[in-house]
Image (tube, rainbow, N blue to C red; front, side):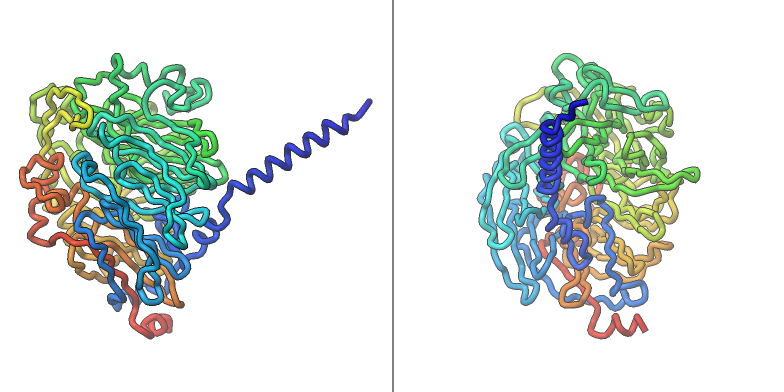
Length: 611
């Protein structure tokens, strides 16, 4: 037999090129920074969205001694979501609109550089729920900022100079951005906001070096736009995974309503490097009046698992088919391993706005757990595990009662049992620490016509504390993702709108809308420490180490959906999609602000606790 050496050499060359390419597209600098617990190099701390730190100088024994180490004014008085990034001797701080970025020298808290973009203020009126920004991303020596006006900006991390920009939307038709960009390998991933303006949601991947658009995965529309393979993209069907089939989205819409179909992508994204899959959720279908859009309205309210390199969808899971309540599916997707019935499973956990916590096999998309994480949830009795569909209670279905009928006491309210404020994962116990809302609503749908750039809502909403409960509007809970059960619950006066942080020091941190930063035990929720900042906290708690000392920080600046009345000066109870009336008492406890608070132990406290 004649051996083809030329073919062998060609094959070896191709393999070498492939391996070289795989090495080139990784970002070892970001991976190194993220793996060093002294840094906070990603908004969620890691690709898996754990919001967990191995730092333990501050621990359950000494956290009560925390004191303010330093503060910084951002110069902006609107809602401050997300957190700074920290690595080396620099902290990168962001603000709400106009989306300023400051590089702060940790040695003396002076500014290394500032980036202050000039954006058209016309974008503000089409930002649904405050002018928030959920933060920056880092990779390839660049800081990435997603501006409100849909401009993605790459800044040189050392100088603040603009390296490249890309435009991913049009504010004139209601498209804006509030999400943080995410860096995975050689790509910058971003989404779009505007579900209340009839936009069409999508996830977009850009080349990290050039800003060239690599792929766009739409939430709704033809298979070619969705990046679906009808025979290979899978979904949970009749108790097993099955292909979605041809035109899986278009078949669930009437006529061309899908072109105004919503499915925005303004939440948090996670990434599994071994599977090369990026996970995220899509938001509400347009309009809020479900009578105008019969069908399941796929693939709004859906978890997507996409190949990072190509954008092709491997699997999808829709949480709320034919949404009637605005239960956006954009909340974070932490990646963990769970043991169920003695079997260890690579999983994805998702605390949906609809009040159900889902655990899925992140490799296959199989549904494993779906349980209420607030017992007051009443719009559905349970999730049918065979179909994956919630079993809707007709008493709380605006679609069943019809337009111009006010349906009362729907739980949760439109802002969900939890909105985007991310949970943290306690790696020691295997439980999640979850900031939640405990809010119900009345909901009256009405006919609405589409006009580009104008609200496309079609519902009047009022929000209020859950009737017959503890009187507060929030709970902070520990959740067992394998069993689908609440382990403990700590009630709060208002919704817990701050992202949580869990540390190896057996401490969980979160902020409150009144402005308290709190530390509690992950074992039972016992309060260990609290500090009142000048304004309500809707930012995400973070931690870092500098000069051999651990610090914990958070933004103080009321706003976001819950604080929109204060932030935007709104007074009508139904303004802010119902939040203004629901949170009217906030003004008794806090006021507008825009600052960063950083805390540390006094000298010697850590050593004393260690002894």
